[in-house]
Image (cartoon, rainbow, N blue to C red):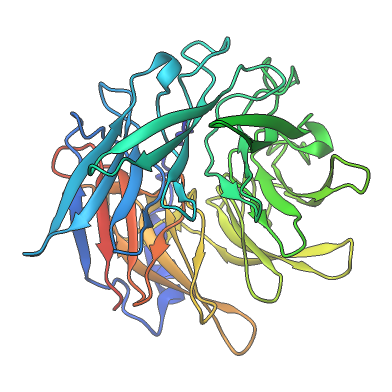
Length: 428
């Protein structure tokens, strides 16, 4: 299930000092549109993953559910303005799956693929999670196929992250736990897995890596990204450096490389210390065109409220971390659970679950822009109020950036029914 974090209240008195960080742009750009407010009935409620779009401008996402087992939904632009919400699948729990909290992905034929963190089989108490496919059925509806049920043993359990395809049509992702007993969880510290189509609608699972805690990392809640050579990169929430700040480790960034004789080899690229470099990365990573990695860590940094970081390769085997921004609470942001998006100019966009300029510390959307001096300029684009605009934006996925520079996302809470929203933030 999706991790929740308590919001930090001790930062209210830092407003005057922090506001100087946002010089050169208005503190908050106006232009957020609530596209849909979830009611918590048949529409699900509490969306956590981000949104994706098809070629026609329709948006797709998942809602974890309120008094239900969750849904997959579509938002379509209406001819007279506004957006139309359609539930395209409602999970039934048990073997059918429950609690979808991650982004969806499309294949080249327009089929949707995703995960549920619960339901399925195994001995996880409510199910160990599933991977599913939704295919347009030609009659305006969608047909759901379950392609894998996790069993909670060596195969993994609790998939919270989005899937990614390779060029051959195989699926890759992580499970938060499972893989065999370790010091953090009796079910295991998580796995990286591959699902390969076997014909006849069947898929085979292969575990590429089982995390063992320690330097190896533990609890890989975030998804994966490929480089051009077929290596995979990801993060773990715990493991790595154990100290007084992080009793189970502050988390790592890792690389998985196909081995010449078969199998995959894991290498840690950075172990977070819990200090200025950050702690507990919960989201996946992105690449820029130069081969640098970017990500977020929920805690650590100058105020222990999280950071945005870059990992730059300095040799074939070594990477160096640069902290691009340390969050400071209000009116900045705090707890950057969201993954990142990057535009063609190299500007970075993300969301924080807390902080912002509103007194409710309900979260914010921010931009980081590279400067000619090599530093990064932060801009607060929007602060959520906890009312009709929502609260706790994109806790388990990146924002969606369109070609015009507008941002789309969800809030896990708030809205007119307090069950979350889908929103568009117009480019200023």
